[in-house]
Image 1 (cartoon, rainbow, N blue to C red):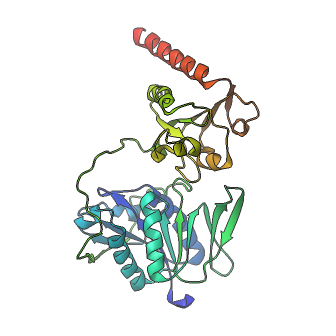
Image 2 (cartoon, rainbow, N blue to C red; image 1 turned 90 degrees about the horizontal axis):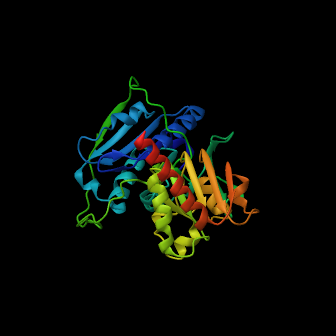
Image 3 (tube, helix red, strand yellow; image 1 turned 180 degrees about the vertical axis):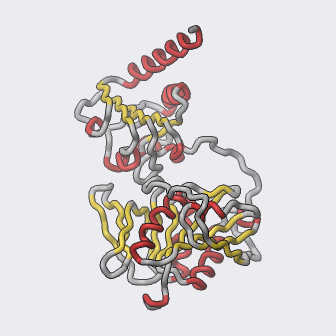
Length: 333
């Protein structure tokens, strides 16, 4: 495939239950910037159930939305999605394809790239266009200690981008664009079928405004109850470092860091977390960081807005009591 046969930027609009994932709006924002440098259109592909509000993709920056309207897309079947995305790519031949580095995106994008026999750079934190019009894909390497700059020789140039890396595209309800319905390609023998949804997390840690995270300073999994109590009082959720996830103290859904979730809460309380580069990569952009650690030389204090040198088993109960007392006073006022 030659360069002249490919033009435009395609963004995969991930959805769940008909609701578009917010990472899509971040990709459209960055895609719009790249498109302006290349003077090419921005496309989006939305595969989902009937009556999805795909017009929102136009309002957020897409010039044309290709909409596969089919209830089968309610199933998180990478093979089903792959077949439909590959068919569209072969049809419109974009030069760049962007996916969110979500759980589903990380599984889907390699399958698409493999089918197209093209390259894929995962977990990018920045994208640029060089003087030759090629995509420079930038991603951390060696636990965030260096930034690798990668170029793909084949087309389309594909990348997954970490959630909350870019700002969401601003909404313009007057923006015009085209919505093109595409016929869904269905599989005779679907690889995935949901029998029953056992659990649904009401709060995604990536969306939380308050995160109380625990690290190696915790002695057992039971001690996370203390963090959960503090998080509940603050209207937040519990996070964790990779070390305690690997010790099975808490599930990987709570992991914050380069190989876990990236968070940007208004308040991040790091309890017994030393501040390894892998963890800092996932939370350093929080608006306010409070660090609690017995080691005054812990790296976490270098980025903390408030540092408390002390034992978390003494500090956290004190915080819980202070908050409870203050709430009681307000209730009686």
